[in-house]
Length: 376
Length: 133
Image 1: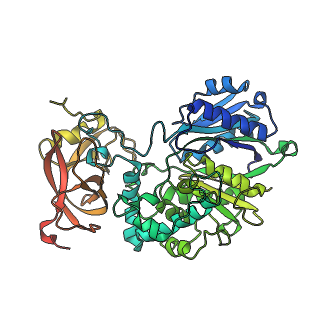
Image 2: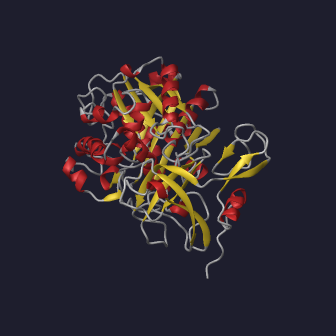
Image 3: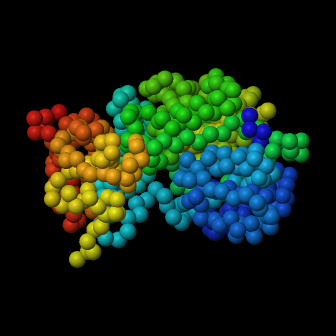
């Protein structure tokens, strides 16, 4: 138990072209989260985002009229920074270094800088270990890792497609999702073009989105002043020396995800919970195969068993582990995974559009980091 | 004529050897641990002293993908492979002269140096004795 709560959440709409600056998106989402927490901008004394976020803290403060701020930090990496940023907010509040920490992430990831595109500079490729050989997009970086999982367990692209169908089903009933009202079938998935053969088709890839999401973390002692406090029961982040976020090629067994497994172990130790206590999960999926590796790393099923686990409908709203109930990063939007934390908060509050019945505990996994949210 | 391609300082020894069609692996002088990609410090013992071991150039494909949208400005599709060398380290490369359309998992491969955008580069071919599926 961390002694902290998520006091408020806020977001912009999710689109392909926001028509405004990333700073404006950050300010809109942040102000919404602060007001949702029942606070004023002047109450915010800590700020955390991702290292890759382009919005300067000082400038965001000026927009919000926030602070004085006494705690700053940034979580390294892309999507793995989502729950890691939350950990830094929890640490600051727990250590008494800040009372109310704003966690934010905002970008024009479709209309501005597109993470999914190759960004080789003009001229020949650099003499490096990846781009030099054509590994120049996240899809290719990750697919090279995922392919070993397919080979080890006989998993097929069609197997991954069953996850996408599930995510798109949730998105179809979520008005905030880009793919609202647009479910797909497994045939649609299999008809979508290859992005990285034989691993990823178009519908295995997350969206590119414009938008911003923010959350406010405060001490649990303030829960009485908050309309809908959600407890942060545990938070963890695990990184290993033989790994890399974008080039996981050096583990002993590439068909596994060791950092996620360690993150899971830490989360369960710290929360005192087990997999059986998790009612709903939000799992970061830049690409659909990641869900399979994470399900196994967390022990929701055994090695190689995620394929039948997904095929059997366990991720559905009435399944054993409803997962990515907002539609995930494939269906709702790609806000670097922080929108999945927001969905976790809504599930525990009981206000999600695809609400799971009687949610006591929600797991949020964002690559190497994760957290567990609960009512108390 | 494009400017010569340069490696980062910690990587230069690898590409210098590659220019002579030699595949080398960084080796800690203190504890003998091999490492790739190169790094200035040995993660096993902390030593900054290192030399290189000559690789046999033989290994197996751990994983692979077909790269449909290769690096700009190269417009030729290629097969990206992760090779585990006999010596135990792994490196990313391309499979050239592939004998079939895949799958390529676990196939034995041998290094073959070719010029690529002006740099002698280690690629791999399926090992001669195992040319078929």
